[in-house]
Image (cartoon, rainbow, N blue to C red; front, side):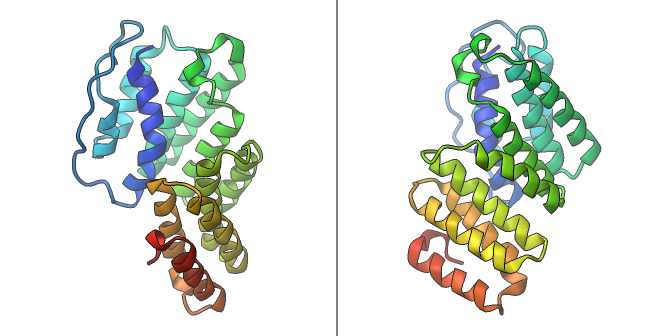
Length: 238
């Protein structure tokens, strides 16, 4: 398993949100190529190319193809989750579902003590987070909310960045479902989490929530949320 696979999975979490919103539109400065831990076809590819908005499905599939024989179950699960996220972004529901099914099967086979340290973060809660993002991009709020429940339940209070991102995604999902009061209340919690981080993606997610609530901008709850964001997290004000 090359470190590119590790880099690809890490990069996907940070860059799919920006890609989804059209904020990634030019190549980033590529970092140095990672040396491989084992020889495979993914060795030497810079993971930061994910940030350039290059075809993520093709990159994820290349990593899968090159790692089938030497990747551990958790690593394969994570790579299939990356591929699923890419397919969901493109609206390919069947392809997304196929990758998610493989990811779930592979993770069920994983044993923490047999996985390398760098992939042990990929737990059932983390996969639930990936599922939630897929269903959100596919426009299925109920499924999004169901999986976010599992994702959030698996997070510790110290995981502030992930709490901010997932709580904001939950707020967006509630807004999509027309549950405006709940969306605004949930968004306030997400703002509080985001204000405790220095993460650009957390700020971006708070912006996304406000965009999702824009059709209801005349509602008092939405206006109050806007004021709260301006006071608590000015970088996310719209």
